[in-house]
Length: 354
Image 1 (cartoon, one colour):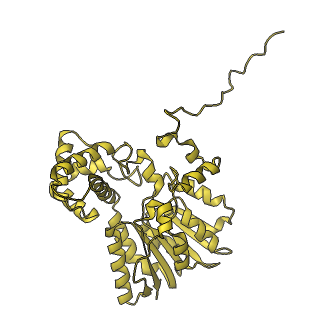
Image 2 (image 1 turned 90 degrees about the horizontal axis):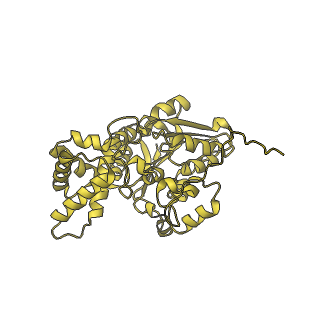
Image 3 (image 1 turned 90 degrees about the vertical axis):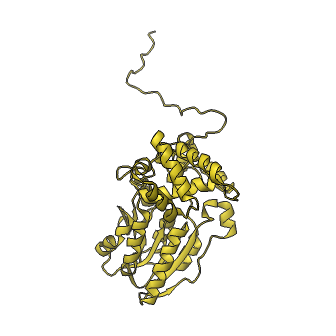
């Protein structure tokens, strides 16, 4: 009897790429964390250990934000920094029935994934509006979608874990990747290209203003000298230059080289994405985005952001635009900081429109 001939057009199931050792180490190898719906128990173990699963993001101070904003059924809520959608999910549920969530984000790689997750929750299609844009332009979206403004508005200014964890985005120095840092990889200059255009004085000022770097002048000189010898194009390359420079200039200090690396990366990321320019425009327009009695909550993660929000809220209160503002920042509980270390630097400020 003749053996059946295999269909030459059929494809064999693809095997998962192998990795070295017993556990995947590279971001691209973490197949379970890239498919949380298939490996729920494994993801739960990662979270229980106090870590954030790679490629995901754990929303910070959810209970505190919901208590401050007090979203109600039928209201218009705005999430200015959609990210992974953790806060958006809670806001969307809280304004049902008949409420709407306007959600925006500038990241073209993550926003379609997050929108798909939110759509899968089963709420009415018209209850969710998602737009890819910078939050600096949120006033135009609110004007188009809600003529009398928003009832509640949230802006989480932190970098999402999906961006930090993915070495190809260039935000992290823990894994090697291109020195990019652009929120939208198709627009603007990468961090490497930006360094090429800066003078010593300009880079010094950037490190001082964007991250309060105490050794800005020395580090700027070392970075530009290394870049002139051989262009810095990778995250590990820049991190090593900073560590080498820090080891020469630290003298007597309790600071660590890793702290200097974090501050330089933060300063460059802010500059690459014009984060302070976007925040300043957002804060100028913020009071006019809210209905009378509307509530706004802003999460910041470093002093440059928090100073701007604090001053804008105080000025708004003085000028009669806000009825009340939070006198002190709210921080994540110690339990949350232990279970989610990325919440440790977060500061929450709240204001209510007059």
